[in-house]
Length: 134
Image (tube, rainbow, N blue to C red):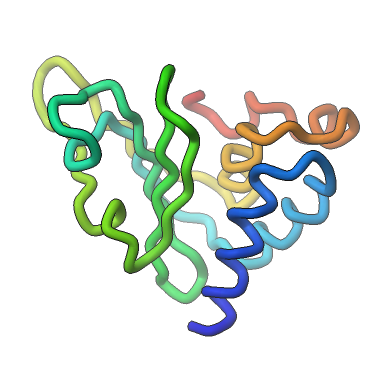
């Protein structure tokens, strides 16, 4: 778990850095299994908001993670014991749909890094469309 915590800190800081996306991509791929992920509108983050999206996935050791994002909501990544991971729930009703899809580690890494200002070569090698459901 110590490794996961260190890796999470590195991942969070790397999401907002200006370079080295390829290196972070490779680290993410090495630490995330292919898995069924969930993308949905979520509740439990800000009272009354239904426009915040959540992307739920897990690391190899089973540590849950949640990427939050929205049109006017800052992109944030939370891991395991963070309150957002514990409180965020998919909104289940006829108005919003929940997307569960099998994603490869490559697709998950590409999705996570798509919110970062990556170097041009990274964006060419890993176009955002690889990650499905953007």
